[in-house]
Length: 330
Image (spheres, rainbow, N blue to C red):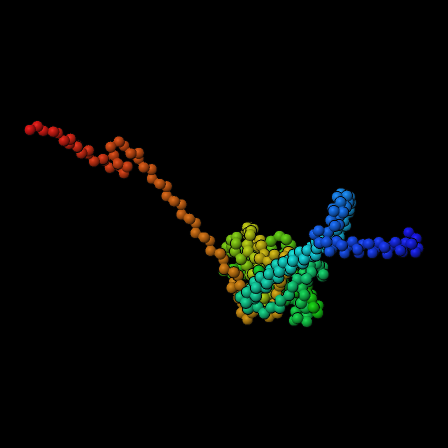
């Protein structure tokens, strides 16, 4: 519509009529004269309104769904981040718990052997100096570490220090083929030399070819002069095989190390050895075998009960006759 004087006048008249109708409707209250026209208009425009609402509502719902989906997506992302953080926290707690257990075992071993140790952690595996079985620890010369120091953990002998840097050191593991350590057999004190064989049991040449040895017997380190490269009394392993000497002067043993070289984490470098040889005192007590249960004696067969006898085999007592009362005359 064009903006003319007539259109403006018509707009003013419509506004005045609208205000007049509103005033009449409000003053009329429940008996408003506009109720009937309002009902008629509702009956006419109601179906149209429902139809339009049926068409518009899916569009509105779709818009709301799109709007809500952004909120749901952010909520899912937040929950996923929280879940990942919880998993990482649980994993770190497991690692901390395992390290605490290893450190506790290490301290008990060091205390039993009276070893002064410097704790360290394995931070790398590899052949930094051309060895096939080495690890790198996070302790070096600044921590008092020197070449040819014994390295242990809570289970026993790990190896010896070969190369030292300011803050790290390389340890040659006891299962390396170039590794050799003097050993002492538990109880009998027989001496030998153990060499690594990689992922196979260590090979021990026992000096006494006639020494009585058995599977399960354990060995510890014999020790070196001034405690370098090995301090005495460190658990090495247990015998899992014996090769017959065949008249030779020595006897060959196969010894399974106590230490798991593929799962090293917390270790201790012995910076000061014990004043006296601990001998076998660092070895844990052998488990006492549980007594075997005695076999039960077989039950004696019982003879079947014969007629006229009790279940225990005794004769039945004679039957007592019963007197029937008789009636007398007179």
